[in-house]
Length: 417
Ligand SMILES: *Cc1c(COP(=O)(O)O)cnc(C)c1O
Image (cartoon, rainbow, N blue to C red; front, side):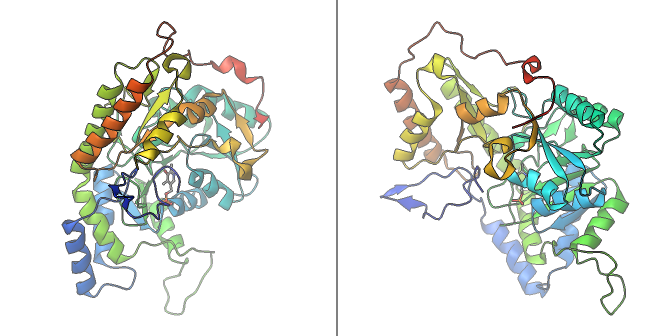
């Protein structure tokens, strides 16, 4: 996948320089010992005690009563929607600024993803626009079957506003917390806000099982139903009886063991990502026109740190810094390309302010991995320092950040993009 450096087939060393990746897996002796223990226990066939323990431990961490371990976060989103009864013809509201998995899960059910723009400071779903989208869809006679807020780059969406809006509309919330394990908002852990929450343990995420996910919820019946659907919807009889269409979405016992080791290390890995963000914040503090996405969120897990560049104030664009760092074997990525701009969603319904498009055009995600060594981070910061010194700000008197466009400019109705 894009933002996490998942498609890196390069070796970590290249041209004699160690390549600094965006967010590579951070695994070591603890993961090795847990994995070996699981393998030697004989529980290799998919289910086993590591899966049960990983579910208990993850649920405890997220503060939900139940959890089901799955083969991916995408599988979790899909099952949550199926279990909530999302069906063809329904609308499901998705932030336009997200990884494609959020929207794909809706498509798998036959429902229509409707894209809503985000807040400029965080890139998270804009509650005011959400309310308007709900209103307009219902006025048009559409059934809105779910809202899928995303905790962008590990910063929780504004649930203090989102949950009451959805409750008033009678629409369930599924929290896409794929990026946000360990983060909190108003004292509540990411993953615990909706009817169900979904975590990802993809290779680039804050903890990894090399590939995996989890659905968490206080609703035991919902989690049981998802567990049943995830194992081919097998009836409890010896002869493989099926009354529903199921899926093969369970996490294996071996990978659950890796996940347990990672979960034990979550706090220390999160501390390292947070300290990377602080370092970047310091580095850019004197640069007018550069801000950090979600800079004001002290409870983010800091999965990825992105800067947002106002080229009018800096005299340079995010892409120029990206090219400079690429030349020094340092990986960066743009912020997500909004879903309404993706060819696969051409013509999709969307309620837009231009904020997501601006973040895509002006954002740059910097190396954020918890395995990044102090020497690597020093090198990244030194190369950024070189770049900043080579581009003295040209327009020091211009305001650093343009005021956020307000929702008035959207136009009167949901538009097709
Ligand atoms: C990673 C991610 C997913 C998908 O998780 P997988 O485990 O890779 O299937 C879903 N939503 C968001 C926002 C993500 O970042």
